[in-house]
Image 1 (cartoon, rainbow, N blue to C red):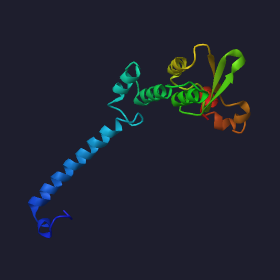
Image 2: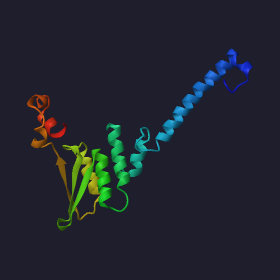
Image 3: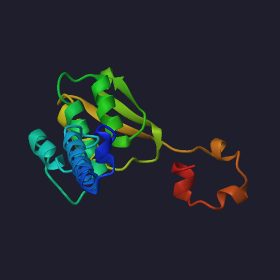
Image 4: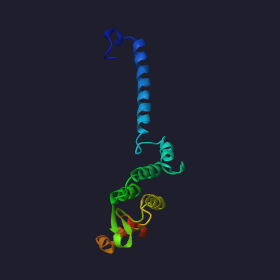
Length: 173
């Protein structure tokens, strides 16, 4: 209304028309934003199935959206020449934490150590499959997990730790 001539500002008809236009423009903007979001894996929801089909990933709509996004991102990152950084990026996309990859050339293998995630990360089967898909066939690999040590837990009192299960003490605190 501020861009219209002054005599329109007091008109109920013009106020109603501009209000309707405002509602329609807001709906259009929302739909436009949603459409643009579908082009980015981290924001996509409705187009996840299309992403999965393009990348040759089996579609399972029953799985969580975050999980499906992590599989898609891993597959995208896993394309091209295989390097330690690529393996690290793929593993980090599944674990949602920092990962170290150590080469063991004499044994034709490498080790993936979960540094930023305590315990066993979720989706390990899918991570194993993703690593198996991208690594050279002659290389083996193992995983190492990080847990809380007794030395770390000794800073807490028994009363503090009594609130947690053994699994929580190893993996969460």
